[in-house]
Image (cartoon, rainbow, N blue to C red; front, side, top):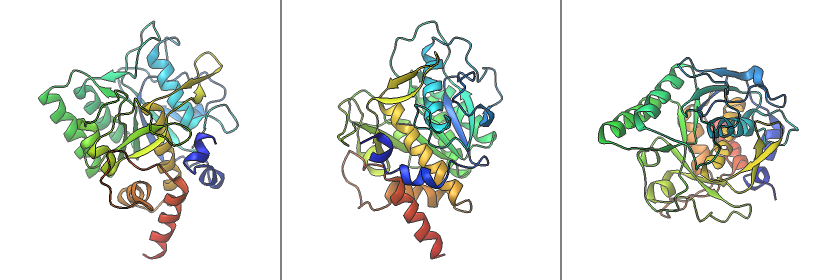
Length: 291
């Protein structure tokens, strides 16, 4: 079973490729905009100091940003999942490019993430893909990041965050905020990956999505395979974007509830349930019929 089928995204993708007015904020690395299999006409840069286009194709930042962008906005029929190429992607680079592609999931200081969230919301994002870890945490920085997440809640912008790949049990300012949707990673048999972080807040309001051997776009013209919680996040983000494309009048709270709680019992486990995109679609259909 492929990752799209595992989370029941295939029937939702058959209904729609997304709508341009649904804007996804990508807070990640820059993107290789010269890829012919990427829907580049729907990709825009959030105004800022760093370009949304890659300058060093071999950098981890460029490779990571391009991979995630491909999962969301690659053209249908490419090697990538290509979940919602009809939507708009707002690229807000947070990772500096370097000459080496060695390293783990990119990280950023909490103050930098906070600024990126606020700027991406100001650019019109409805949902934010945050496949990043927090580095060098400080009390002041975490307060700024918490306030940025509060700002997202007030502006009805859904923030989807990677749970992290340290194989630990606990939480961070990103995963414990009640408005964020933390995403843990599973294999293609829906078994939790050993490296995925878990915790009470992740289990309570998060989701699990595929994070093993996910194929998307590389910067050298060939497909690349990647994994972990940062690869799991776009499955949830893409589901939200497609749901909003189908239910344009729905509120952020309605979309978030359908995605995170459709068919789920009250949660007590530290591992969140598996994303079920079609169940979320059916929940939205039912909710809007009864209004």
